[in-house]
Image 1 (cartoon, rainbow, N blue to C red):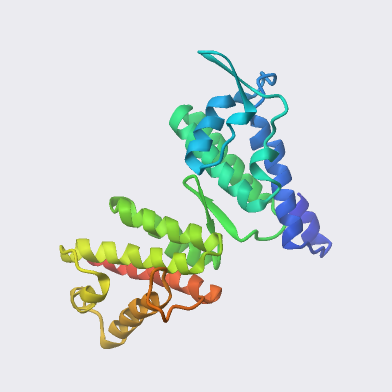
Image 2 (image 1 turned 180 degrees about the vertical axis):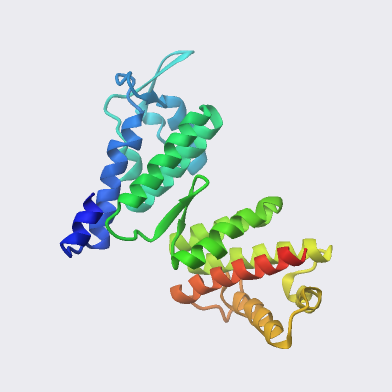
Length: 272
């Protein structure tokens, strides 16, 4: 409704304004549904167990907000609210939502997973402008071109279902890009392609030593061979723990590198 109203009257909004409205919508949907206050009996209570679990997961101490009344019963301090966790920061909102999803997938029923998926997709659809990220399988990822995201990011995650370690590398790359850790994103992309290559060629060589055999295995032309070799060279210059020649990566180039990783992944897995 609001997006349609803005479109009909030619109204514009800033990214900061759209992010703020997204956060407010999360407050009145997800955070109201998953209350941390024991007095709100109509909501699903996560309570102190969630806070202790979250403290362990992200390495921040929220135990001071809990009060142990006896061995089997925990109450969350009524002074506690979700803003302690999210700090009115869009990245923190995304992080905490991901951990709520992980927690309910471990300890709650499938209805809660369905609720979260439907709610987050609905909130993203309500945003007046593209917020620069999308939601898939309990995680947020940076968005670029919608067509390329679909073909080379979302589908790449599906193709990698039989390669769990490499899927994690690609997920880490997307998360690093979302958090603007661009050199880390390049390194994780490199690890993804290196892992797939090792499994295809059935050896444990580093990617740089596997490149000739990889392009031969894939049947690449000389032109595509050059692209793959330059992909590896670029990663070696920019990824974390690289040589002393490493310098700060250009965000637009990193986005293209992510798409290139998805494309190479697709070509490798199709051949496999």
